[in-house]
Amino acid sequence: MISYIERTRNYYGTLGYPPYTWAHFDTVPFASPARSVNKARLALITTAAPYQSGLADQGPGALYNAAAKFFRTYTMPVTPVPDLRISHLGYDRKHTTAADPNSFLPVTRLAEAVTSGELGSLAAELIGVPTNRSQRVTLQQDAPEVLAACREQAVDLALLVPS
Image (cartoon, rainbow, N blue to C red):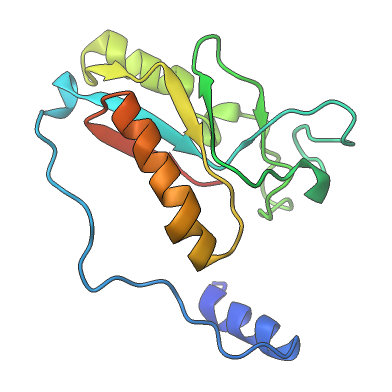
């Protein structure tokens, strides 16, 4: 077992930062869906980044690639399935390779859920949200942009698939 919280506190402490304050909310800004899932329109929200040629290896098993990070939310059509990658993220590269894009971008699986009638529909565009590690930027910039994109696409549900 990896004690993520303790490890993170120790890491930032050794860098001289004050103890990390984890994001928390006394009231959660969620609501019950107005429709059942089999009638709902779903927005896929991802932390995966669009592939950018010329920025070193971004494919499955690639080493961490900070150059591939992005810093603003984006939208992108889900059809055809976009070429998104996760080399810009810190994930357990010893135990996974990110070879199956459905593990971080389940567009194909969600489309199958629509076809089978388990999900009403999938929004035409996915929403990419950066991992800036800033509560302030997330709350003041990214979250309002994601909410606006969800409202623009008239979705009932949002599925965040963090990588």
